[in-house]
Length: 270
Image 1 (cartoon, rainbow, N blue to C red):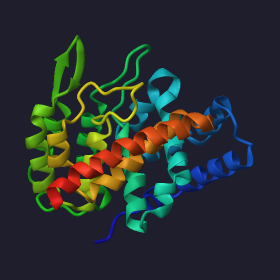
Image 2 (tube, one colour; image 1 turned 90 degrees about the vertical axis):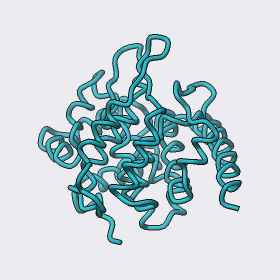
Image 3 (cartoon, rainbow, N blue to C red; image 1 turned 60 degrees about the vertical axis):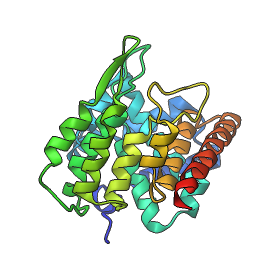
Image 4 (spheres, rainbow, N blue to C red; image 1 turned 30 degrees about the horizontal axis):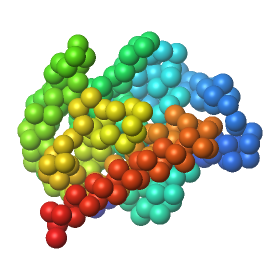
């Protein structure tokens, strides 16, 4: 099954990310102001339009809080290329990981002093609509629009905050499997985006609606596991991009959580 390449759709993007990695390794790139300057210099209005064509919502995502999410997502891509799990992944897995990073915060809305607890579901809703446009195979085109609306609106309230409504997961996951097929590359990309705010990996930053152990066993399958683990490692790495000790500490914490998840999954595959 041929997987669409990021480099085909956005040929300028990955060479730019490569240049960030080279500059970081050499010590030339060593601060957030320097990173932000390079990022904003690359994402010209023309480049932003190209990004928004393949990743609708990119413009809006980058408009919040002086473009903090734009810098973050770019840093996640750079962190991905530096990640041991990415290096050890197959070529197809590496391609899926790039798409997951590009989509994971697409619907994120950042306001001063507030976290966006529902953007995982909302970003997944966009991902599901766009993967067929990008060339990912689809089993049943009918139903994508309804599924996207269901996923984007799977929101409830808790302690005065909007949080994702995990009670909708049976319908959301059932829709993914029906439209894209079970265990397919497209299904794995969408689920990784969907669940990247659904697992507690850092004690300092707990999620508001984490999956239960039963839900983990129901919804996280073996093809998804390495993609989701890598996504969550590099998401954290990007926030501590210039802090080696922090990255190692958070990496160890995340790996310990996923070792437990692997054991949970193995219990139902034995």
